[in-house]
Image (cartoon, rainbow, N blue to C red):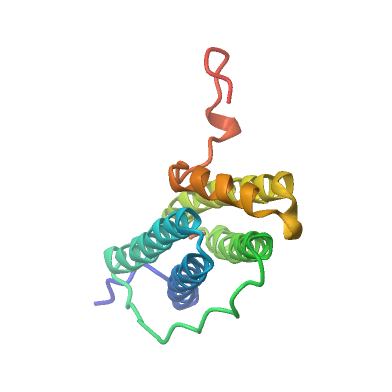
Length: 184
Ligand code: OFO
């Protein structure tokens, strides 16, 4: 008796997305190590924490595949891309990566919609919301570094940005969570 509630196509797409989340964790990990080597311990700390979040995303998908009776395929994780050249470049690369990941998430969400697999569609909505937060967070990093001088940020501005990010919240406030009493 077949108890797998996922189609072969969706099972494979979810497995691929699981590897993409693991890849994202490696990217944040490598950029964090790079930032630390540049003397930016606060930014490194922020990126290390984010690497952990990406690993949690990977686990979330892995557990979902198992719960639906599907087969998990843990494969090799592609190496992260080359180290950034500057902190500005680091944040640009993060933003680009998050946009690529959003596109991948949308593809899986669309596939589940086309197949009328409403359980997977519902599951993917968590990731759709999460990606909005991640893109907002990456945009706010870009805004901060732009104010600090972009690629030409001086040591004093980088120092204060580094201090700032050490304690920065890991999630961006979302427009849909704003209320009249508590506008974001
Ligand atoms: Fe950066 O995002 Fe996972 O999904």
